[in-house]
Amino acid sequence: MLVLEDLLKHIEKRVKELLPQEAEVVKVEAEGPEIVIYTKNIKLFFEDESLIKTLASELKKRFVVRSDQSSLADPETTRSLIESIVPKEAEINRIDFDPEFGEVIIEAKKLGLVIGSGGKILKEIVTKTGWVPKVLRTPTKPSDIIKGIRRTLIEESKERKKILKNIGKNIYRVQTRKTEWVRVIFLGGSREVGRSCFLVETPESKVMLDCGVNIANIHGAYPYLDSLSYSLDEIDAVVISHAHLDHSGALPFLFNYGYEGPVYCTPPTRDTMVLLQKDFVDISKKTGEELIYGEKHIRKMLKHTITRNYGEVTDITPDIRLTLHNAGHIIGSSIIHLHIGDGLHNLVYTGDMKFGPSRLFDPAEVHFPRVETLIIESTYGGPKDVHPPRQVAESELYRTVKSTVENGGTVLIPVFAVGRAQEVMLAFETFAKKDPDWNHIVYLDGMTREASAIHTVYPEYLRKSLQKRILHNDSPFDSEIFQLVDPTKRKDIAEEGGNIIMSPAGMLTGGPAIEYFKLLCEDKKNTIIFVGYQAEGTLGKKVQKGIKEVALEENGKLKGYQVKMNVKTIEGFSGHSDITQLLSYVKKLSQKPQRVITVHGEEKKCVSLARMISSKYRIETRVPHNLEAVRIV
Ligand code: ZN
Image (cartoon, rainbow, N blue to C red; front, side):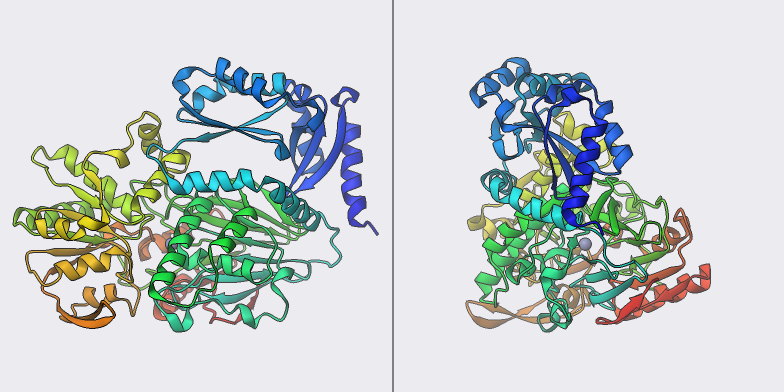
């Protein structure tokens, strides 16, 4: 039987056989899902790109080439070379060296100019110095979160390398049990919205999809992790579909309780989830709620995170291969495709997704090589959940806002800091351009600024037209109609009249939005506009349903408020598919699935969507309860 050492040795042996002598390979190591080749002649690999391509196609692995430490030029010489060959217009912000990974990290405003046509400049850097350049985009507005993450990754690079090597050993272990069955255990987010968490198991592997919290329900806040009959360190990998807390909020908790494995997600998901988790910790601290993790666990999670772009195929266990695809929901949001057991079965989990046009993203991906089981969200799975088209929603927003502000009222739009906020910002930017009389400021409070900055770092995750504007220094997020709120001025902004305020939390569950609500709700000149999903039990849902009086905490005591302001809901901005889009998604999938499982919706919506899919398309459907296991092979 092959043991681990043999498997990696075998790969090393084949690598040496397939490469010419002058490749001067020093060692071959698994680092996470990648096989790293250390060489004394990195130049050769960059001059003849077919070398790596041949290895990848022969051995079906992802290869990375790195200089052996002894053949790296000294950092100062490298820095001056970079400064002399990269044009000034690229606006290099900083250059860092990461000797552990043999990388020189160049942060600049215009990446294209650092790369050079056909990668010419990068090639020159690596062939002359041995350092492999990694280019990162500077956000158009300063961002503490991006800066913090980038710094942490460099500071912790020694530790990260150790972690990646351990992960590599686990991935490239020799499979000892045959993939004879596959099942999914539903640990949260079934027949409910919140705490999404599913575990895909084969005899060989255990992979978790999402690990969220339910912020609207303190009694069912976390997934049923304690129901597992084994410890968390037996889980091979966690894959996160997108950053919203109901999908990523419990992830650092795993690292507080013994999980040491990898987290896979897209780069924007990584950055955005750190932003939201940090805020979650801050809010819990302020409200005195019990903390299940702290900043240090978020940092630990970050060290274990391996990012993947859409379409990159990655071995994550001996019998499971992962690919992420665009979900059209928020920045970096992914549909997760798992290829299980070498052709045995293919599972697609949609996460939250939008199968329709929006200003920010392309519609969710429907093309997969194969799909036998589909796990689909059901947020708007009811028969009447039909949303108006985007243009109708935008004109309604325009009319509502105009009539309020022209009467001296203030508009409050509670938004999720990531997703709806940027979508609505783009609508306002268009209003201001089209309406010559527009003279209203849109105030952004809370994390909205940081979230928008993350969008400008990853334009390739946005729709083409938007991408172009950001790359041409015309980011709509930087328009002068948007102003950031100084927290001490909240009262003045709310009471001045004629202003528009966008603030988290989107369901009025906390954040500055509550403060504004208290200041504005008793005056009938003002309007609150809901543009996103409101979960049962939240203040947002109560106000949306027309509650006339609410008791809210004020300096530790409850105080009564009359709700006299106008209450308006505009559905068309949702980042979720409406029922028409959900059904058409199933129909347009490149292959008709054998089985559809509905999750992430109120119970009646999950059931209703499943019924419609089975009667319309004659597909077997399942609506699991939490804690249930569904065998799919
Ligand atoms: Zn979401």
